[in-house]
Length: 81
Image (tube, rainbow, N blue to C red; front, side):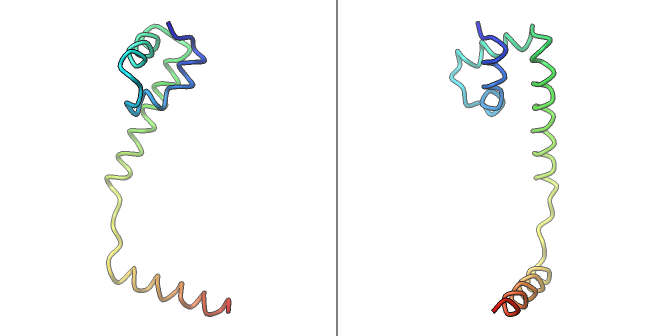
């Protein structure tokens, strides 16, 4: 059985699916019963969900924006030399 310190230390790996099945099962069981660890798990789970949604909704800049950005960076580089 995992204690709270171990569970919280491995929480990101658990959420990323990087733990071996036995360890993941222990953490899942601990989280189901632990009022101390479960809020941190819920927070990190929602945080990851928000990151995924933000990444999926991102807009790719168009070629005109890229051209203007490169020109601006080139101008800054010229000012530094």
